[in-house]
Image 1 (cartoon, rainbow, N blue to C red):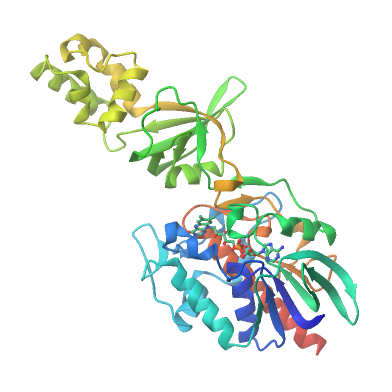
Image 2 (image 1 turned 180 degrees about the vertical axis):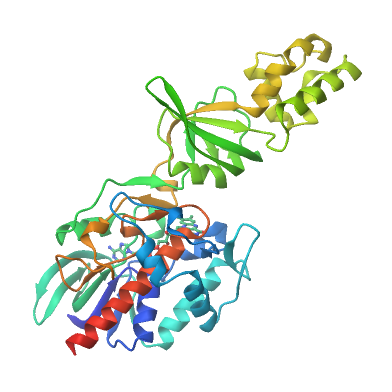
Length: 412
Ligand SMILES: Cc1cc2nc3c(=O)[nH]c(=O)nc-3n(C[C@H](O)[C@H](O)[C@H](O)COP(=O)(O)OP(=O)(O)OC[C@H]3O[C@@H](n4cnc5c(N)ncnc54)[C@H](O)[C@@H]3O)c2cc1C
């Protein structure tokens, strides 16, 4: 049995950051219990390995929750606090043209390393390879008893930083929600977000691996009405079961089965311009095959898909299709795919839903169970693609640390 003032379950982005901030506040006898053999496995894989840690625009409108808002936490600890601190402990960061903040090395593992070294230097105890299987109130002199497969830990303050259910191969597999429920906290419905969308494949089979800059509108039937839910421009990547890419990840936060994705393959060109271009080209090259005509405006495989969706043979001569340019232009501007589902937690980047914000106070401490804090993805807050989820993990860890430090000072 080991005794600590503060025990953090989970050594991911939020847990590591919380531990570090506690050390900065001078809180002693802090430990992290982590099931993986190393801290921060998921953090090292973020941003395609490049580590998109935050964003220059971190307003709360980039976050979702059915039970509260990220605003109070982000206001207490924003991207400037984060980057200032990460720089202080040895990192160097810059923002790209979209405001996404990365380490200058473009290696997510470099961020994990600076956190690991700083944690070690500040004397936080780290127990890796320790899978927590039980969390209870009561256990001798301390308030909380945490049981792993091989050991037991007592603590006055417990921080649940076990992550969500997204990409469980990195460690976080949803156990944290069970711990929270066992301690009496309400957990909202969970869903995968920032994830590929599955779609009907009729016209996009064979496009796997093609990535294009498109404008995509998410549409939904509500009764008789068709409404535009949201729209975004960015990368669309075709996959074996549907679509992926930055813009699809962003839309996935809103998408439901049966919604429609209206893809504009040529967002910089109005329909009239495309019609003029096609007409001119067909007039100048009447014997050219339609797929060759299309190749000048869009990726050739996509061009064939567009023709197929208009029931036009791609080997047809241009002169035979002169009357159909309006249909083709229409399809290039609005290529509709029906969403048939999401790819699921296995390949998602984040969990939608979690421990209800209504259960937590301004420092992310449980209103019912004093001394119990919940941070990171485990909380019912999820962000858009672009550094928002890591910022939430770091901000929530920092805010909880501040609350714990104040609490410890009062208790002492
Ligand atoms: C592939 C991928 C790429 C991503 N890219 C980005 C990005 O570029 N920018 C961005 O903002 N967000 C990104 N995200 C999301 C971001 O990584 C998460 O939101 C963030 O890591 C959540 O931090 P966390 O500390 O709450 O959880 P995690 O980082 O998941 O950490 C939780 C830790 O708790 C441990 N744990 C869980 N259960 C137990 C247990 N029973 N006992 C002991 N330990 C346990 C886990 O092993 C894990 O180490 C990405 C996610 C994925 C999957």
